[in-house]
Length: 453
Image (cartoon, one colour):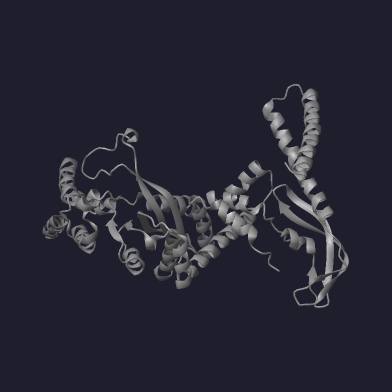
């Protein structure tokens, strides 16, 4: 234990003893209180102590200098000490610091630069906390949570701003990824450093419509993940050997990314995030997705050797409207559906296509039957489910479906939500980082960014 830690420990013990005695007096004066009352009182007192302590610490840390360098190349001379405010995790903090003025007209407060403080704005400690709540629920609801959890009176617009800040940081990280992934020098250097390539890596993409500028806009979401078998003793009852039943496989190490960009621009993000996961070097790269053309165009462009699998659930859902239009009785519908699903399950897709072509002669089912024919014909090579299962591949896109629900539906499509395109993009990126377990590294990156002059 070094000397600074010893001093810190002694000071902490003295403060704890003083505060403990104060709380003991409070309990003695209020015999009817319970532990919850005491905890709330302590939170309020400690919050105020933290606010006041931070004010004293900032003011005391200011080192008055006769002159400091200015960005113009000249010197800014000391004029006076000026008050400033910032919003922290302890509330609004006021402090006094030296103020310098340069002949170019620029005012400089060295303490603000040293401590990375933007006067009048949210502090770097409070921004990630507000943003985290802003990624989880509406800004108005987050405002109420902030009041309860952090004891701060913060506007919903401040929470929006904090969330956008973290989304902007994530966007900056992704831009750097995209730039690095297009650099042959970077990729060669990465190859020397990263010795082991993934044995088997999965990727998925999908889109979800969100309300933007009084219309609906597609938010594109992607994911990278690995898949591990679920031990048989942990298999739930749904894991049975029957047609259409997924194998006992579980997605792990899931990473989400998102953007409101069009497909050609989104392709760069797929490649950049993929390079971070060494997708370009994976011994087996498997993409599982629905039949959207933009998805498979991006896969073909970036990873032409990847194994492509059409999500099983999207494949069979084209059969349901045919059964409903063709047969009046539920029992008959289920019998026909089971027969067609069995053909798909056993990789007899052409048999199903022929059956749908024959049904297309019936005007009642012609439209939905031809839609199924087109869908299966376009994805024929992605529907060899016997081979995929024999290789132990996951054939369901539940991972990306979950991402669309958690990012698109639960956050972006909340009742009454209306976004600008940029606002939707930034909030989705911040939420994607949280769901990917990257929040701490995002905070670290944010804390290291220089103060904007």
